[in-house]
Image (tube, rainbow, N blue to C red; front, side, top):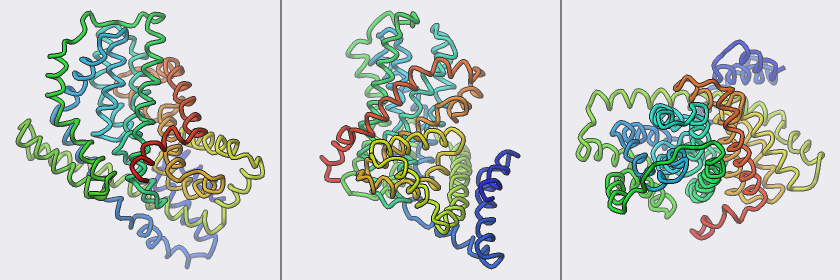
Length: 424
């Protein structure tokens, strides 16, 4: 019954937070009547009363400030100088810029929107089809929330009691591998699609000049990641430092940050953060009902009943994440499914950091999975391209990323090398 209430509210277009909250309240009422519904405020508070959650709005605000200062263009110019001379150079640049840009936003949809407004028109002007340019941008957009700092990692680590610094360390190599896989696909399709090629390779002086112009932007993620991974600061403190760093750059270095612009950025950050927190708080009510009815254990028992092979169970978990992630907000997915599935990963012997990066990468891939991945909708609305056309061009990238996801899932040493090296 609770599932029908949630599905019905979603079908009539109710906001996801409202649908979660009402479904959760209905579950409480079903368990103990009106008396139990009075527990809802405390469940919402407990769901949000997690100190590392404070890092999220600070990371968002730091990204807003860095974007306003025009750092995006500097990073794109650096990427073009490094790889622009290859066939499909601007597509390669899109991927490399996504790696650089990941340290600023940590959001797939934010990256898709930013590059949809900047790189997609530039690629179309150079001779790429709009659909292909959007597909490349969608494929690269998931690099942002995979390479730290990642808001998704903050949520996962806070909810499941997993080291956020360890997750950040675990995400470095997968993010770079996503970039390399996509670049390999672009290179393999270069001649067949007759992708444009820049006429000249950038000189060493030009590359160094672009590094100099981008140095302040590239330094910020190093400060954040280094501080967290080496235990110097907490994620929340690192996020606060990132805001202070961005404010200093925008005010005293680039000198293009105004009080009015800062106010608008704070408003946008508040709106984005409020939506995420409202979703998490509402999902906490439904999560209580799920736990009370032992539904997580029922799902775990069902998976184990299907097979006692850890690899089969892991494949089922990934399939569930990819499927549900296409139709539901990934923050909601994390709040609802992580408490259900993470204990199952522990039962089959997965390292907590390994399980975390598999969850995060699977949910990130679902953001670009047709027919209703969020990044596809963002790019369609920003560029005017049809989702069907983007999806067709996206298929090789999606297949490549899925192969990488299963390789990471079944061979944990690929991603655990760096965190083990750092003592996690």
